[in-house]
Image (cartoon, rainbow, N blue to C red; front, side, top):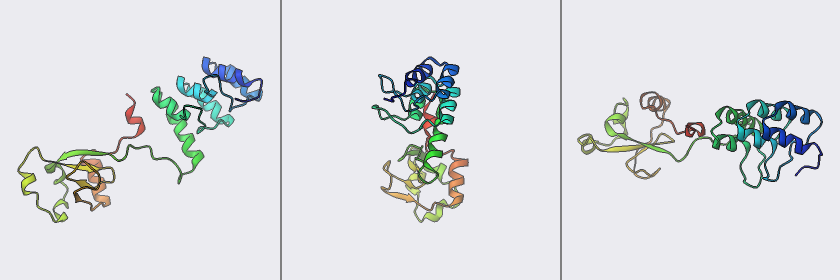
Length: 192
């Protein structure tokens, strides 16, 4: 916990959703790293409440968007778990900016795959170039292949096992995205 006498006021202001008190504590030099008895910082509390104004004020004051307490969850994950998308978006942008473009964490669920009937995949104009016959698959309406996060296609649900298509091109990428509406889910997709 921080040493500043104003730090508890900062965390309490965030816990109570009192933006004016939070701003006053920051202006008075509150320790932005201070944590309460639950080991939550002011930014954690603002994230948990979905208080976007407080999140912005704390980030602007220099609060670390990647700081974690004993639960090992950064404020972004707290906001996401609480279903506060606007606060989560602010925090994710701050985390990504702090880590730089090369170090920004992946926010999609991988490995990921989705089943498609063979006939759906065969609508891709270059599907036949893969050099395999789909005779048995084309005749069975229930036969599916699995499209994976890296846009490879397998007979197996397991990534890399029994690969039937791996000619990933910009055209295939567009087909998967636009025609099949395929995308690995993002963290935000998990919030109702």
